Image 1 (cartoon, rainbow, N blue to C red):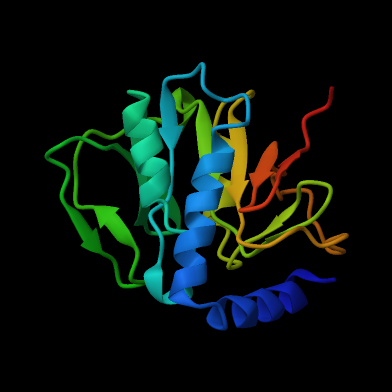
Image 2: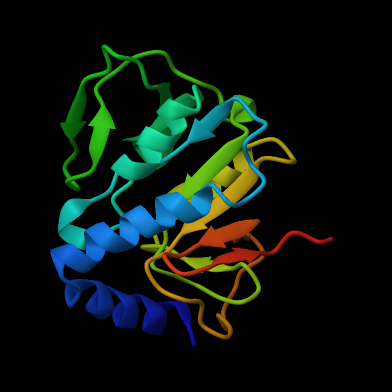
Length: 188
């Protein structure tokens, strides 16, 4: 399927899920993240969910990261790019124009310093390609990370067989975590 078709399909699927399913699936994702080999690093970047788009609730993941004493980095939209801020006890969050909870300000972190990125997505395929909202924020961000940064998608749904219009600029995932199963795209 094309990215456009997948966006339409998966936005509709999300719209039709219940809050109860979303909470249970988000907890399942956080539990399954514990099963992938990403825990020997220091800096973990995660998104905060757009609640009206029924994205996975990353508060469970934040609890896991804090419990493991990891440095947490959050994104903030700045023009056509993302800036990245260290999450501290004094970090104040504010919803952006797109209803995304973002840090108001704080200690900015360079993308080269980030070890693991939890990537938002609408859909992904069996080759590790993903479909986001189509603005390119995460592809631009991931392209600025150092080689070896681990990219972990978080998905409420299983993969589709193939995204047919993958571009050369699209950055594939290393892993994708769903409530039921983990997918690895890392060459063995």
